[in-house]
Amino acid sequence: MRVRVLAVAAVLSLLPVVGGCQVGPAPPGPAVIRSGPPPWDAPRDAVSYIDKAGFERLPLDFSGPAPYTFKLAVDIAGQPVQLPPDIGVDRRRAEQAAIHTHTSDGTVYVEAKTTAERPTLKQFFELWGVRYDGKCVGDACGGVMVLVNTQPAAWDTPLQRDSKIQVTAKR
Image (cartoon, rainbow, N blue to C red; front, side, top):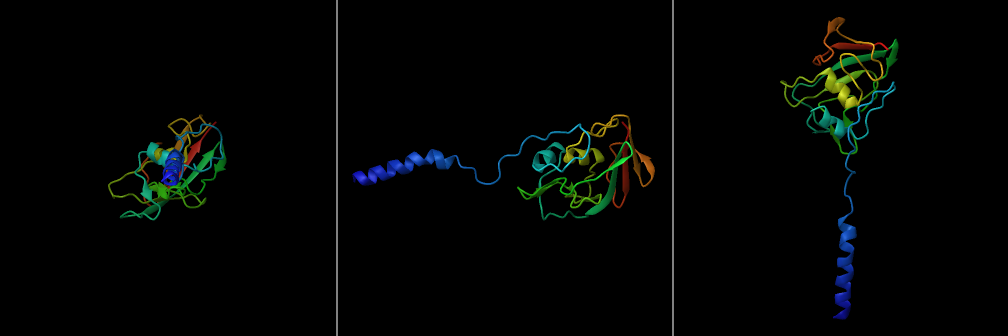
């Protein structure tokens, strides 16, 4: 009987240690919007950025009802900026945003849950974790020009199917 009591006491004494063990990935850090110069990697803990941009977290294998792509080119003071793969993708948690990249060729995928969703260029930069507004991209705050299919557009333009978007910022 005494051995059984000691065994139970030993197991109970381990519960705080075992109960404190983390299962799965650690909680993500906060989304930090970078205001320095490029290059800018894709955030590793993308779920914080997905939340900040106002998107629902979707499983990696999700494909919306009408997925599409567009091309995005970013130029800072005459220098092209490469879009990294996995913007809007959190591989550690197997989640993604409705807009995201897979490669560094400038192709951005839009896989929204409904065709009514209209993600914007501002949301894309929030997913990327890069300061972006009508005046600045990262540290380049000499003005921002956006062209969609060679036509001037608002800095917070909606992302359109098969479009070519050029964002140019001056220092």
